[in-house]
Image (tube, rainbow, N blue to C red):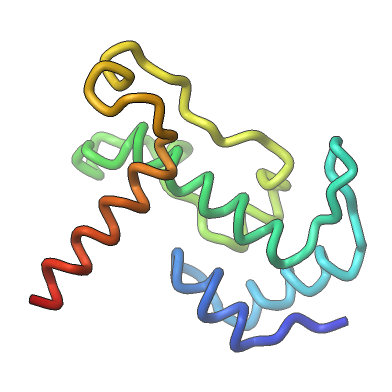
Length: 128
């Protein structure tokens, strides 16, 4: 079953457009067609890959996002979607460990929830 290119482009590709669109779509199709399951028994489909790549980008941004790119090692640079899937990084958990300071400042909200609130706030500012 082929991945819908429109859904791929709008929901996954827009997260990081580095690399070749068609090659990345092909590796997504191959991975989805294999009908792999993760260690929890979840089917690795397009939705799963999107969620994992989003979690990875949030984790990466929390760890390296504020650094000047010249101080980030090549091995630590943000992986393109093609490399993320090819290296099977979708099989890893991408949650940032909680910090006491964060709990004090932001309460018990997850980093993902806070980042989503920030995105909504920024988009509301840009519309004004």
